[in-house]
Image 1 (cartoon, rainbow, N blue to C red):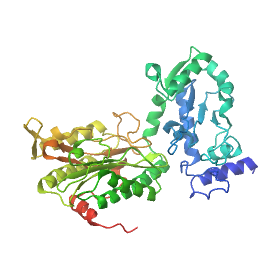
Image 2: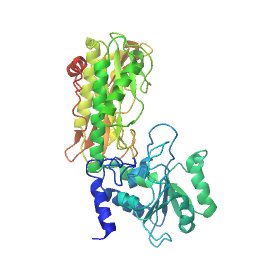
Image 3: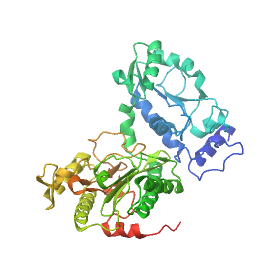
Image 4: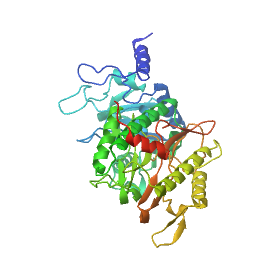
Amino acid sequence: MTRRTGLLLLAAAALILPAPAPRADGARPAGDPSYSGQPLADFAARRAALRKAAGDGMVLLIGSPAGEEGKYRPDSNLYYLTGVSAPSAALVIVPPDDPLNANAALYLPQTGGSATRFGEAYLSPGPDAVAATGIDPVHRLWDMWDEIEPSIRKAPRIYIQGPVGEAARYTASARTIDRIRAINPGAEVLDVGRLVNAMRLKKSPAELDALRAAGAATIEGMEGAARSIRPDAVELAVEGEILAGFRRKGAAREGFPCIVGSGPNATILHHTSSDRTMAAGELVVVDIGAEVRCFSGDVTRTFPVNGKFTPRQRQVYDLVLAVQKAVSEAVVPGKTTLGDLNTLARRLFRESPLRAKGDDGTVRTMDAFFAHSISHWLGMEVHDVGSMGATLEPGMVLTIEPGLYVPGEGIGIRIEDDYVVTERGAEKLTPGLPSDAASIEKLMRSKRTR
């Protein structure tokens, strides 16, 4: 066994084993699974599939730089193809017989691999980077444009991280497009999403593990919310309990800003948590998602502020829950689409004997108060990429989130869970969190034991 082969094998093992201890100099060890927790072979297979899909075209993905504040979050497509979290990293994938003389090349800033007084250490060019990523070569970002210029001159099409065209004006991608045009004015510049989005729809076992971990952290946050909701509680204080739960379960980031909407705010779909004080008799919609290894959870529960639903609230709540159950049971792999699920949800709401008054005072069937779609894709983005018309296939992950919003009654109720499509149907990724009304009331009375 050569030294390099040994390094590659050790790095591959490191990506699927528990996180190694930090190095004394503060740098993250090569292959640290905090980057992804996914096998190197998964990333290599994705790059190979993208290379084939691009044909005689070239792929050039340039990651965003680190900001001065906050935890750095890598660009999803670059992370999907490499597992690398280094700011400003760049990936180049070229066709056969390209001047680059490699299937793919990774370019990283030269940080020295050590933490500094001002920030974290990230992967740098060198043997550690080759071992950690399985990509060879890994060169300095400084040298990238000079090294890939012959490839750009030859390429008829170049796929970048969009947007492209008129939509690219005033965006980071515009600078990339300008540099490409200066080298090869005739090259067609396209959004890589047209090739990658469909690939990202089906999740690998390691990706599903990350989604389950994100779901577990989201549940921890939701349980914290349930125990902190009471009359005179403030929405932002409840959000604080949610974030503490996320952190206890290892989620460094949120997949999206926490939604804690009480009273009239419960009928605002994307309400941002505010300093509003809750009152007895109101409902609180809590829609949250922890992010673990760049994969997001997305779970919603609705709570009565004083710990017990009124009879009317319970009626509407039970209807929303029944629709969620029916929709989840209607998933047929290879046949059902998200559109089919949405049509079913609207029909079930319409056929319910319950009624409510609209803003104009007219009595309406309950489908009039279902203000959004029943589902969306879930993955590295909370509203993940992929065609909304795609047929559900094993490995796809989606939310099922019916909701009813009746402002005139101060009722906003949404129940949402995450599901993976299996050969048998839809399997809930967040089974540990109760959703029936009696269990919600019980959860609000419980005490945190950890």
